[in-house]
Length: 217
Image (tube, rainbow, N blue to C red; front, side, top):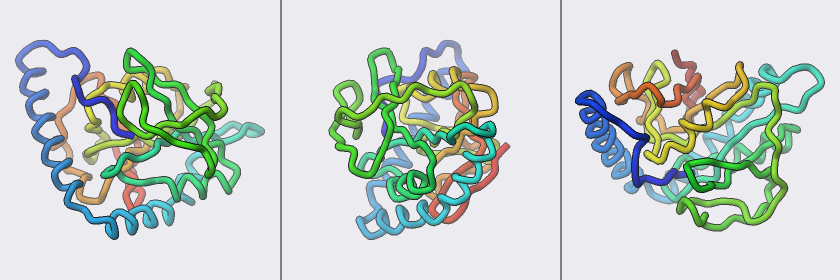
């Protein structure tokens, strides 16, 4: 899911201005590289994410209290984003409750239970794939796994999103112990300090690529 790119969260001060400029430049560079990936490469990467899904299932089960259903909040990819749909199917088939977001005004999101036949359309608030109808998911009070769409992430988990602030705001509401996984391509995992950061930016615990699940921090 690509976020609304019209603005970052409110910023002030010289450091914030420099960081905002650096974020804009990195977003532009990553988007350019993504647009150059062909359909075959995107299909291969989707299969790669699916091959790593067992590790995500393991994390979801570890985070979930005994007797509760594991929950993974994922996303439906826009054209150039890392496509985790095949992996979502593997999670669903393993008994994990999977949900995807619907964008709301004010950079907020609600969540809809995902299944392989769920109909999708372009959202009215953010121009990204979102569910048509479907069953709303009341988020549990126990820890969950959240798969964060990202343009980049560094070795300590600093994540670069699309700039809408949807996930940065949402992450603040999660139960303690929830696990954050940034879905990126392999060349979008950067050394520490190379992804511009602000205090409100969501920090990931893992980077999920078509080839690996990298622990961060």
